[in-house]
Length: 187
Image (cartoon, rainbow, N blue to C red; front, side, top):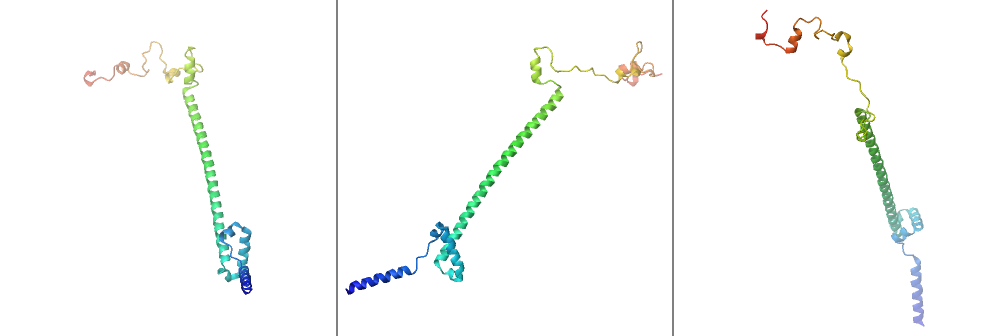
């Protein structure tokens, strides 16, 4: 019986020793259980400087730091995705603006060309060639100069066309061009 009592005593002592202090939780356990992490951090704060040597407090701090780094990385990725999305939208908007601007410039250029060509376009001319007339082309008045409209410059029938105050023979000299000095009259 002494052996049985000894074994029983050893079992009780071992059980009491094992129940005395629980094993500290690991970093992974704290990361998986946010409630336990929050409780451990609160307990460690209340312990003061003793928490520096406590293994469970060290594990809780490490878990808190890792979770903060994971959250920070998640936020950074979300910001990067938002930035890329906004940049793509800006590029699309700029491309649409560029295309609209080019279309407006092409339209303005076509209108300027249309104004220079008159009311006719090359398509209109090709369509109207068979008809014998250019559709939409206006008759233009003949070009006149001041001599056509100024009565003082009109030449009367029987006049030579020289100005009334011109010297006799001036018209002939003007029509034949300048004469060399050897051919000029000495008088």
